[in-house]
Length: 258
Image (cartoon, rainbow, N blue to C red):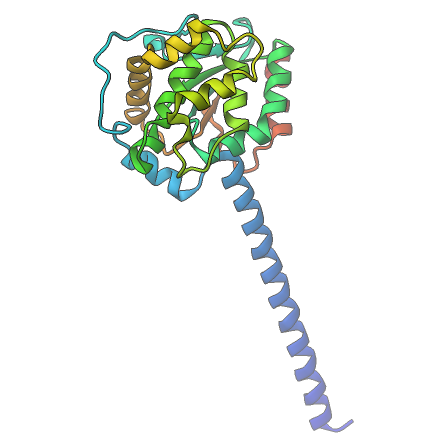
């Protein structure tokens, strides 16, 4: 074989090898992007959410001047946590969320089944904290109104069910549908026994508005990067980009066994 032919074949082999390396690199980048996008969707790390949290002010510039009425059963510092699950559970999941936040809905969609399972088994308790960052950045009062309505549901022991219904029926981020009492009542009708005169009065009067604003202020002052912020036993699980519902379950069950 002539030197020229050998050189041609060598060059062809090199080109093929280079092309394979390019394909491998492209595939690796694609997988990283897919995983990264999944984590953003599931855990709410979208940059816009971080910006929203960083820039959030009070919801629509108005403040409730009434007394701070803590929802029935709320606990923690200043009574700002709405609990779910047995107090004896060895693991605590702290969730900061906004009912208008799309990333919060993504988290709910992915993690709700395992969270409910672990709460039902007595292995996990959840502390929900409500924020209003979307109101502050997109305009409107839907975050605050939905949070107040959820607090009203807590007064009758139906927070979790109504919480889930709100996320299942979350409007587009730019749609302030939750600002309308009629919408909140419509969704309350999906929870057995919730749509009562007492609940409607609580929603219409904004009984827990000042409490919601106090919770929102605690979020703004807490140094959090966005919603949802999800903390398991003191550790922000955002730090672990490999977090999945299965891994969360494993961590909780491991802690439960001691």
